[in-house]
Image (cartoon, helix red, strand yellow):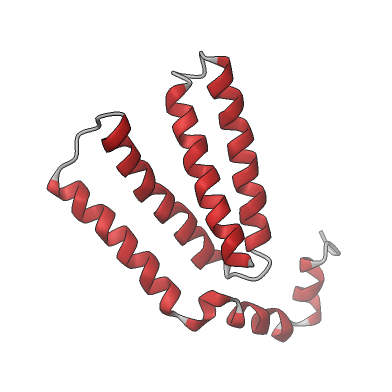
Length: 131
C-alpha cells in the first residue's frame, strides 16, 4: 500500500507543479488554489508512504520521478527546449530511482527492522515523547 501512496504523491506533486506553471506567478486564482490543494495532497500521501518506506529512498523516488515527469510535461505541453543533455539527465534520474528500489530495504523491510532495533531513547522520539 505504501507504493500506492507514493505514486499518488508523485502524481499530485506533478499536478501541483503544472498548476504552478498555469497560475502565471500565482496571478490566476483557479490554478493557484489547485496548486495548493495538489501540493497538500502530495505531502499527505508522501507522509502515508513514509510509514513503511525509508525516508531517503522515498524522497529520492518522489522528487526524482516527479522531476522527470515535469520535464516531459514541460517539453510536450509547454514547448520547453529539450537537449540531449536533458534527455540523458532524465534517463539517469529514472535509472537512479530503479537502482534505489532494487535494494530490498526500499520496500519497508529495513525500515521496520531499524525501528525495532532503536534504543528506548531513540524510539521515544518517534512517538512524540521527548519532543
